[in-house]
Image (cartoon, rainbow, N blue to C red; front, side, top):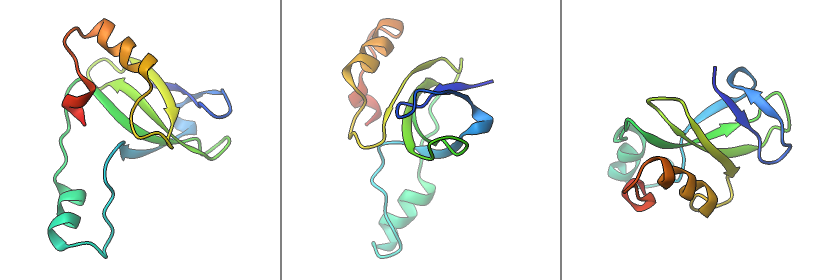
Length: 109
């Protein structure tokens, strides 16, 4: 079972207390954008094996959205952080780099 810590209220919550919101750090396009941009946002996603950044909502808690960095192959969680940030905090990038030498945040951005 996946357990994530809410960065707002500090609760370690099981995934049943949370709601996944897809990939983090995307430019979100709405229906008012061009058809090509909207199609790309809806359908043209990569699903990498390895480090992935996701949006989660603490539904049965504070109700706030946050981001999580985890490995899709092992379910290892590298950390959670506020959804208000445009990129992962340095301490999370450092934890990922320590486990995955040569990894770069910019490769995934």
